[in-house]
Image (cartoon, rainbow over all chains, first blue to last red; front, side):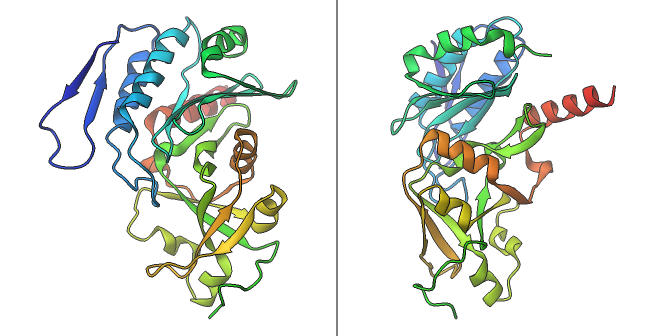
Length: 139
Length: 143
């Protein structure tokens, strides 16, 4: 996926990365902006000792969304992690799905309120989203 | 002054700051929640309520100088029930500082997020995307 590095817009703090990709869903472009924004968070952003969000984690999250932005799927929530990772989440349709991009503990966690808990590897993330797509549709 | 080795009662509130980008709309429960990532650190910083009271401080005082952060509370009894220990680890700038220590699996972090109660929620600082979801849910509920 192509990426451009914004230059000269910060005197200090982390580098700012902007990930660019074709629109795949109405919310996809905004999601990329959100991920890019996360890379601008400075050390200690969580009020404690959080690390900067790592560019490769942001790129991995953006690449995942490029594949998971199926037509009609609701926009996910995208949160930074204190270890420098990024988490993509859906909480709807009786599902809590969390895709964690992190050096420490990458993976997929699914809690189905009609079933139970499932943990998968990141390589299974897109297929997991596809399998739950009817319940993740935007209402 | 409360000694560092004083016991931590089950009903004591433990406070943690939450950055606005860590707060998400949960459509299942139709409420804003701290993301589970807030609770990922095996040695998670918190602030102990009994020390704050001893210093005649309100819980909100741990947000001083952090105008965008919100504040959530968990009880010591809850975190102990999740196989965590609570340590008093005061730091020079905050005597109420402590840590919730222990392994925090994704499922456990999810339970932390569900149990956490907002003490201060600064909606004006939240991610517009999450606010939009909240407002859309409110609109659909009023139709």
